Image (cartoon, rainbow, N blue to C red; front, side, top):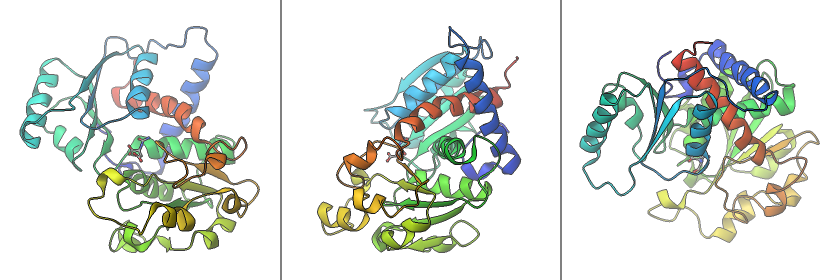
Length: 312
Ligand code: NCD
């Protein structure tokens, strides 16, 4: 594979290869004083970010540096040139500088795919509009596998509830695609206004949908809370923040409905007190939110390694 644009690009074998490679790289790094491998020495990775990001950009930067690649951070914030043109011109410049990989985040769905026709290097989608965020799905799957499957194999039989602003969430889309490939069952839980039209059939095989969080939690192995993406909402999708939390927020009482072994995830950034209560987000046993960030580095190392074909 040359690019990673969608979680749906990965078949079961490829998805497992990424997760297994991430485990191996993680172990290789953990045993070292100097947390660096020489694998991508002399290669150039460009972070091309047209949208704000904390975790994803720094995580890709650290992943590339741990593999000894040269990293360029290009933040296009504030650019007022027409979308298509500026993206193309930027891409051509990156191409001229010899980027081996372009890690792209863009507010427009499909922008990373456009990039593939302008650059020779590998393009990795780091989040495009409301479309996809495949490395987030991979790091989430990695986290579930470590916590609930001893870090091996697929996720056959796991029940994952993805809760909240599904409509605007590239995380929900990529996770649904990848989790199904890995054999998990997904239930999307949201108010009807925050579900895409025809969501039951938008992923090929029908997906389970519920409007009632309390009824889903008792059978969930994983509950993944999504950020309410106010910046993508021009109108109001629910009566009030308080009403939203009351029905779809994960508080301590609701967390008590989960089976003992179940974990709570969130991709960040969180709206504490809105979709997730602080006591839940910081829960020492159930919350994997900090682990997800740590695991993101290993998973992105694996993706860069596999796409750029490391020499060692
Ligand atoms: C997500 C994103 O940007 O898509 N965050 C992330 O990458 N960790 C989710 C979000 O913004 O809500």
